[in-house]
Structures are given as C-alpha cells and as structure tokens.
Picture 1: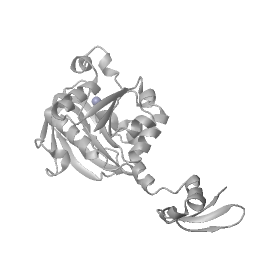
Picture 2 (picture 1 turned 135 degrees about the horizontal axis):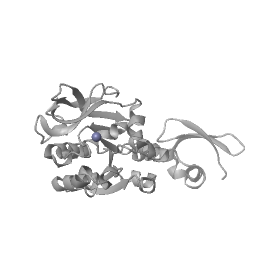
Picture 3 (picture 1 turned 90 degrees about the horizontal axis):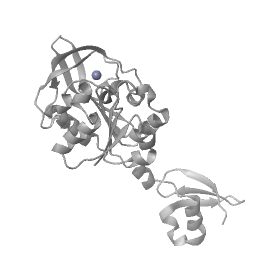
Picture 4 (picture 1 turned 30 degrees about the horizontal axis):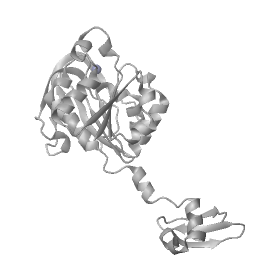
Length: 283
Ligand code: ZN
C-alpha cells in the first residue's frame, strides 16, 4: 500500500518545541509510528519545498493514500498541485487530512466550504468519543481517546455535513468538535482527523496513530477509475479501422453495428459502450 505524506515542514525547522518533538519533521514521525504497527505501508514524502516536483500526476497515479499536514503555508501550495490531488481523489485515491490541514487548499476545494473552526491555544486535555465502535476507523482504539493536551478546535466547524461522523471531541472547557469525519468525493474517500498540533506530542499517542492507520486502510481505493474507464473505453480509431477492414472476424467483439456514411465516415456502436459515434476512418 503506497502512502505519500505531505508535510509543509516549516515549524519543525525553527528552534522550539516542534523541532524538539519532531526533529525530522512530522512526516517522518508519522511514517515511523505507522510503520511500527503496520508493515503493509510503503512511504514516500513531499514537503512544501519540493511538493511541485514530487506531487505529479505520475506520482499520484501510483499513490494509494495521501496524508496531508499543513498549517502556515497553505497559500504557497501550487494550484496546479491542488488540481492534480483533487483529480486523483475523484478517481479513487484516498486522502487523510490531519489537524490544521482543514484549511488547506486541497481540503477546502474538496469540501466546497471555508472549513474554518473556532479555536483556543490553551492546550487542554480532551476526549475523542467514538460514536460507533464497530466503524473500521475505531478498530483497536480506546474509547474515548484521551488527549493529554491538544489545540482546542471547536464548533462551528464550517464543513459540509460529513457522510460519516465517527468521532466528536469534548474539551475540558466545554466545547465540542467533529474531530473524525469521512467524506466521499467522486470515487475517493477522505478522512479528516483533528489531533496533531506541531508543539504537542499527539503523534506519539498510540490511539491517535492507530486511527490514522485505520484511516489509511479505510480510504484505500478498492478500484481506480482509470481501471474502470479502460474497461469500458471506446475503441480508438485504429481499432475501428482494424475491426472493419482487417479483422472482420473480431468485429463483433468491438463493434455492435456500423454504417458507412460515404466520404469515409463510419457510424458505429461500440460493443462495450452504449453510445453511437461517428468517426472518419481512412482505410
Ligand atoms: Zn495547530
């Protein structure tokens, strides 16, 4: 299972708590922690610095799940990369959006809303309550997940109503937050999960890591749309030409019916597709 982790990797390079907790970056901590409990995952990485070089169409075609962590440089992510990621999700790639990734261009585009939250930086403890312990995202996880300290995100969270609301965080201060949400966009699944402030050790919390691992498996694509469309693709001109003029014995497997309209134009109905097309065929 190929997992690409995007982390903007800015906070952890400045002196301070983020660097102390995540000296190699949040992306490497996630890979280390996830890899420690799941040997089916194969990781690669992108950061703000190299994201436009790493996150290409070819890379996304071979990526099963993309994990996204960003905070202060959402605006520096290239729009062309956002286009590619959204297209890949629509075709089936999984996306796991963490913490302040809720305001990333990618997540906002896929949600269609501002995705803003109310927040405090009092680093209080909170409980993430799982609403359905049978849900695949809850496998092997304590209920509630106890967060020693985390940035306090609270409602209203400007997101569309989740397709599946799996977890809600209650904070000591009384606020609540929809902290574990699932969406389907096109053929891809998206999980949003709240923990992961850069100066707090949430990515050392076993339950938090277990949820992210579950999210990778849950959003893993059962099929990529490219595989579907190739199964039902229209014959290309060269195939039509071959079926009509060179291999009439194979014609029925490709073309249900056809008429020559003169001037080299053929109107035909493809065997694997319900529509009728006209094509200028030069025999
Ligand atoms: Zn934060």
